[in-house]
Structure formats: structure tokens, C-alpha cells
Length: 301
Image (cartoon, rainbow, N blue to C red; front, side, top):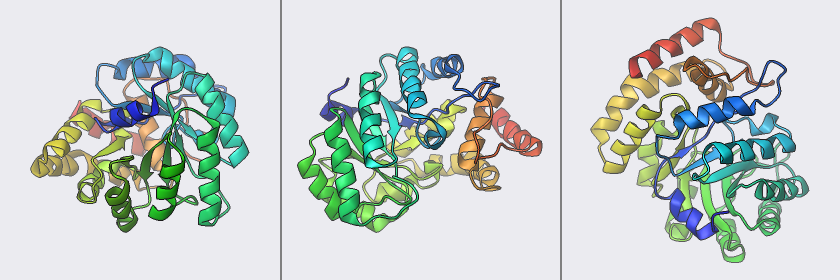
């Protein structure tokens, strides 16, 4: 396991990737397919792999499947930091964090607890309990029903040494800026909007210098080219990639709710990997939409 402060510094150093989770014909996790995909991605450098996260359909996986995903990813890329999605209620999330740690994980991305809203003191108690359940680094993900304020996060950072990161998927730039000003030295701050490249430059203005890329799954060269332009402050280069790839991709992604995941999985499939379908309640792209995505990939390949 990577020491939490060291993991925080690694996360700050580059792009993060969100691998998909492949399934077989019986809708079971397909470890061989995941390993093949990750080995194909391995020559393209990233700061870490966030497996079984949002793009990896964590919400549709069983706890044992999540741990198997972690073990498979670690075997495929033994030198890469492996961060796993973790969530649900406090007891389940705490037990899952421990299982991920035992399975070889280096950290967790704490996803929302789902369904029920909760007050700040309840969310704070939930995050504190999960942090105390594991020695791994913990990244808090502001999204959906679980959104911490800057004040709550400051208390948690004080109390939980292994809380190493904050990821935002809300688009609330005011809260993001309060956190980066107050905790930017203490935590790795990560952009986590769906297809975050569309928002990366705006988030950079709020003090967020790294992000996770889902399209890295199927066009790693394009994802790294955008990240290089972003890091260099090359706004013209970013604009060209947004115009030629990211906005056309978003046109496909926005055709149906859930396609932020489904379109990524389709992209991996179109690159020749056995992904299987997305699990319900998500739905797969239509034949027409796959053809649109295939044409876009062909231009970038």
C-alpha cells in the first residue's frame, strides 16, 4: 500500500484514469478482459487508476466484485496506484474499505451514500468513520446526495490524517474555490465532472490542477494531449481538442441519461476489447450512436 501522503503527491502529479468494468456473456465480471484493457493502457502514463468508480459502474457491482476488480487491476499494472470506488451506508462502506485494503488497493474514492439526503454533521460522521476504518488514503467525492462544505472538510482534514483528497462533481465553483484556498496545501483537489475536459480550464481558475479522464479508456493519446495542453496553459490547444473531439463526443453522450458511462464503455468496445454491456439501470448505445462514436474514434486514431 502506498503511504497516504505519498499517494496524495502522486495524484497531484498527473492525469487520473477511470477504467470501465467489463462483463461476460453471463453478466459476470470479466477479469481477463479488464487485464487486457489495462495492459493496453499501461504504456500511457497516468498518476493513478480509479477502478470500480463511476465509469466502472461501482453502483452496479457487488462488494466482492469490487475487490476482485482491485486485485485484477493490481496484477495488470502492479506499479500503478490503484484507487477503488467505495460507498453506500457507513457500515458497508467501512467494511468495503477494509476489503479493498486487504485486496491490495492503495486508496479509495468515497462515492455518495445514495438515495437519502443527510445533514452536514451526518455526512461528516460518515466520512470520519470510513477514514478510521482503513489505513489507505481517502478521497471525498462531492456529488449527488453527499456534498461536504468547506467548513466540514476542514474539520475532517484536521481529524483524519489519511484523508488526502477532494474531488468535485457538482460544478459548485464557489465551494470548490473555498476548499482550494483553505485546504489546497493539505489535500489533492481533483476535477470530477462528467467528461471533465469540458470543465478543466474553468476549474483551473478555481485552483484545481488535476482531474480524472474517462475518455482515456479508449483514446489515451487524445486524453494525454489535452492534459499536456492544459498543464502548459495552452488554451488554444485545448480549444482545438474541445472543438474536434470533446464537443462531438458530448453530443453523443448527451443523447440519453447515463451515456456518460455507456459511451465510454462503447468506446472501449470499439477499440477491440470485450467489455460486455452496461448493467441495468443503464442502457447501451444504439447502433446508430455506436457508428457516430466509431467515426469520431477513427479520426483520432
